[in-house]
Image 1 (tube, rainbow, N blue to C red):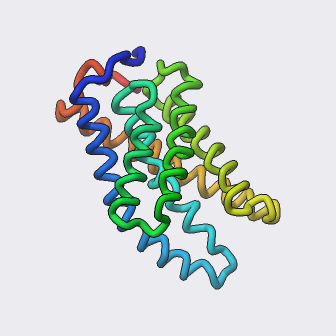
Image 2 (cartoon, rainbow, N blue to C red):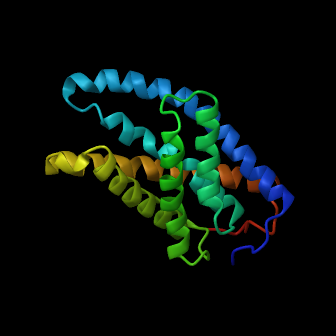
Length: 195
């Protein structure tokens, strides 16, 4: 199915709901992140919680793009979720918005590579791969990953990809399928015969 050219009021409302819903979830996830960091830090793996949870943190962009099928939905969905997290007092403050844009661009690239035509497993695999690569590149520069040993970089990359696939692929697909079957999503944006 081709992408929809126009934004409808219902699309804007759904995008806002995705942003608010995930922004609130992110606040709880911050506590999980802190606990996991405390567990993994003595093992010298204090960054592993970031890799484990990044798929969840990137999910608003993936689910917005997959549900709405409109160019730019991934970037906007991820950015709105980051703004909500920041406004509700997220621990990373305004830098959350920068991460939201980077994560949203990564997700959008996957749909761009499929020319906004594949809202199936190919599209989800593409957005999972591009989000993993873009966010990992961002962490190479921002978090000093470039200074890590190769085995640690490979471990982080594999864990990140698995997290992206679990949250951004499997869970996004499951949620969208449930919403489609319950007739919450408009038929102009979804195809009930998606593989």
